[in-house]
Image (cartoon, rainbow, N blue to C red; front, side):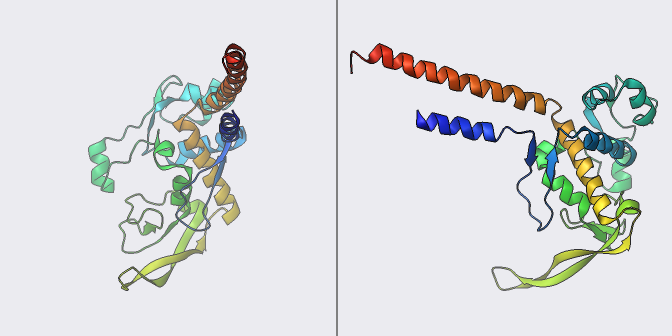
Length: 248
């Protein structure tokens, strides 16, 4: 019985709406996403429509559903989030043909509907935070989190350009190679580092929301289900004792 109580308490503790994505691989780049922060999600939707939707679809989402969940009426959605003439009831797809995208970028930009569930919020945050200048790359930038990415740094005007700081590191065989030690802002952008960091947090939060729009509802209902099972388990335990007391 004590084990059941401990397990239930652990599940309840993990069911909160705010969560930190795990699996961080870069030092100093961690993010906490709060899906209850509507203002952050609204800003993230704005940034996504302006900077990402031209190449990356979220084809499992509809403009109308996003508007309802984020507290936006349909007129606001049409005036501020739709730039392609689509209807609010349509899915958020792009007009770019995959073969043309592959010819332009070297690879077709993936749909981002499930990127947060596939890679995690920390991956998205780190990827958008760690572009740096690299003249050897076709777009003049590389990425610390995803080396040799084919995506240009579409947010460079906001962040500016970073320079990679390199150091020598040894592998298990004693061989040395150059690895990135950190990134330094070389050319400032339109936003301060703190403002750009908040932009990336907002954009990451929006992609986490898109990956599972019903997450908060699921967690809220799940908490009540766990509470119900806990109460039911208590009744079942005492009922079992009542039935078996004469035998034991």
